[in-house]
Length: 119
Image 1 (cartoon, one colour):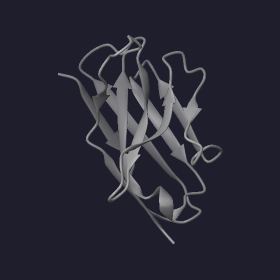
Image 2 (cartoon, rainbow, N blue to C red):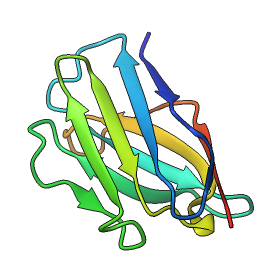
Image 3 (cartoon, helix red, strand yellow):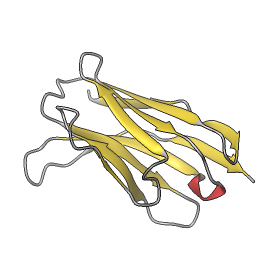
Image 4 (cartoon, one colour):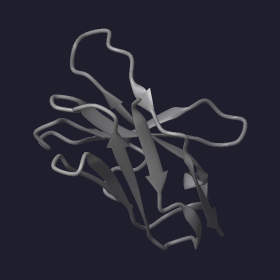
């Protein structure tokens, strides 16, 4: 049974930092892209960042570029998101995912972790 479990969310003041982590288990994730989406209250889920199996070519949403850094540890099947210079508009539930590079593959999702940034 595949599981993705996020941790590290919480409450932080604007300008502060948080680090999210996601541990994946239940199968091999060789060749899988991993990344993060987020969903704010009343809004659609939106892409945040992703990283390939090799760790090259990380890709970010424009709204977080220069503030967030994604990384992964394939030996531990984990993906992390370092979030700096947080803004109130970053408040959302953050979901990690893992998706095979096979075209049309359906992603696995975590249950989400709440990030709240106070002004």
